[in-house]
Figure 1: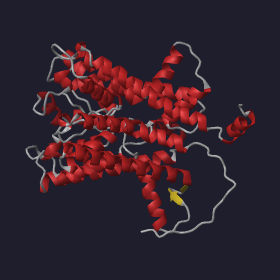
Figure 2: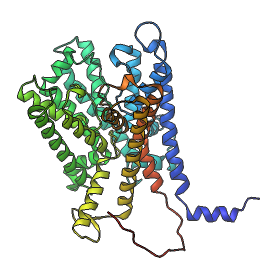
Figure 3: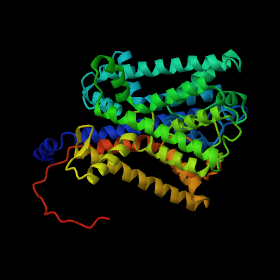
Length: 460
């Protein structure tokens, strides 16, 4: 017999538990459906060059990589897929970058369907904002800003690439790489590292600047972009924005100098044949792209070990929350560091820029760091057992998949079936895991009337 009194009591004590849990499930299920649809389309003979088609596993891997905006590939995009297949990948990147919830809400509004309160709550979680007021308008602005930035980036890229290719090809290449850069997807249409278009891009500061701009804007996140747009009027930036911007600048500058020093004075030889100016530009581009973009203009395997190690750390950190980037999140690492500094200085609270951080924020940051580290370590160990290869290239591959970056030391296509499935899972978790974990931690738990006595344990 159903006890309605118990159900009512449970609902009162846990008002947010069911919606939050269901919201996380919808996010996971929605992305999974998109990946499966993309796999089906990419497995069609129409999607590949020449007769026949690629295997279902290769199609699933490519679809997952595009939808999670990673960029890892077991086959060459340009050499394997037809125009239809490349357009499917382009659409998967766009949907995966902006988020299927945002696009669904936009579609509902276009057909005149009312957006429910619960759908607004899902949208709020997806965009990473606290208040639900004006959330539909914000979603529309996100779509408009995204398309506008990608359009401007494509125009500038076209102005450079039309000088080295046919104008029709230049239009297509410009749109594809503008979307890939802004969505931090890592896919490109270059034949190889000797491709004339790629070689021209290496020596073109305008092309590199546009790609870096698109990547950086994509990693900042909705909140930061909206804050920057509103700043001339409000003259106020949120604490989140004031945390993301300086950390982004610091990581970019540090990464550029370390890669430049390693390539110039230590052991790297990926940039050895280039001029000093080109070295600086490509070191800067690699530092920017390593934080989840993964557009590869130089062979990662030719970089020095110090440069590769820095890229691993930068990939693991990733971009800001509610952005196109992956990783544990820039603010997650920042909160952990701020907590450490506050404890070292003996502060009773966790403070930054004359603000105190709530304990809930610190708990979420520690949880995300812990779970993500465990995932990366476990998958790397499994790959080491399955592939019997060197641990660093395998760890590089796993962190690239987890952070949805797409950089590789050239071992992706040689992985076995089980290893590819593990990488697919890691890419999927990297895109949705941290978000769903935050949603789960945000649930309101039932208050307990039982409190146990405290007892210290030895730490360190």
